[in-house]
View 1 (cartoon, helix red, strand yellow):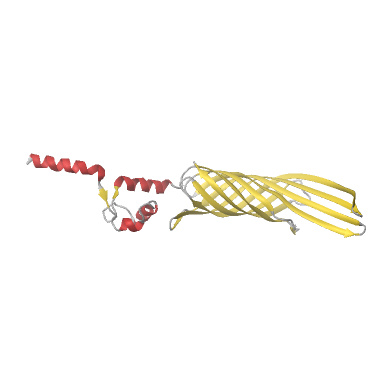
View 2 (tube, rainbow, N blue to C red; view 1 turned 135 degrees about the horizontal axis):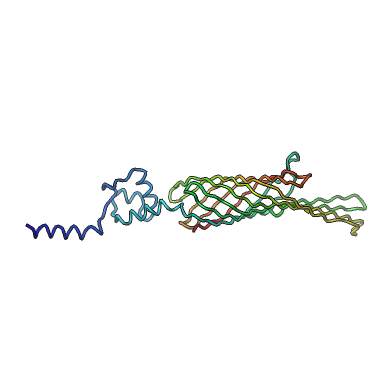
Length: 259
């Protein structure tokens, strides 16, 4: 009898490290936990798991851990490029300037999978407007350019969602900080095609700003994401009588790395 029990014990011990389970076995997972597990295991797929495909307990724990931590890499760095448009001034409305190239560099620190502290630098360089007037024998040319930049810090909030095989993070962000403004205005007059006179003036100002944005991230893998964002910026300039409050919209496409 003792010999029989020894054989049973050896068999059980040999099976323990490689124990196999299926979705029908009692894993003590809630439906939500099971869905999360399936979503974190694209190499298996929920259909395969539900049909009883054999996986090891160790694999399940590893995949569950990956799913829980996928959005929790603490530090991030991102860069985005896009288009700034609709430059306007309070009480004056849109200024009729051309669109400007936009760039944004951002760093972040994740407080949780829902909230992240963000800080960054953004620039719209530059909005331009050109006009010409002819009244014989003179030809006048006006050229204006507005450049704005900002250093901000704020908070981003989002909720991770699963859409098929894609992991998305729709989010909203709000930031505030310091603003910098540069305007150049030039004038040239020609008489019968010959340069007569002109001037070129530059003016700088600074102040505060805020940046409100909405966007979505697509997780390519645990470390790399792509995102698309729309934001609205407002600038309060302390030393500008003509343009004390400026605003514009921005759309950008960029990528981020988490580490």
